[in-house]
Length: 125
Image (cartoon, rainbow, N blue to C red; front, side, top):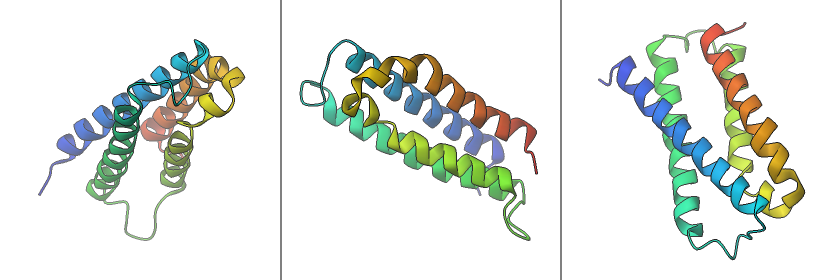
């Protein structure tokens, strides 16, 4: 049986990698880079997908260790899933809309991370 602490370390590591990848893509697009011009495109996609998978699996492992699955999941877990889904979609945004790369980097990613942290720490409803 995997411990709560092990799930937490895996989850946090995956989230750090995920946001590093999203930030790197935003900076690349801000500097005029394109998806086709990104020499590390496959590595970026692999890191993004792997980080999403590990964050989801470890996050669900954390929920199971908190014994929150009895009687249905609380709303904050669904909020975290929405954050996860948004993070999954954000990889394409800087390349499709380069003008949004700067606001994404300076506002979007910090707000998304802050929302995820708030949901995890305070567990509202």
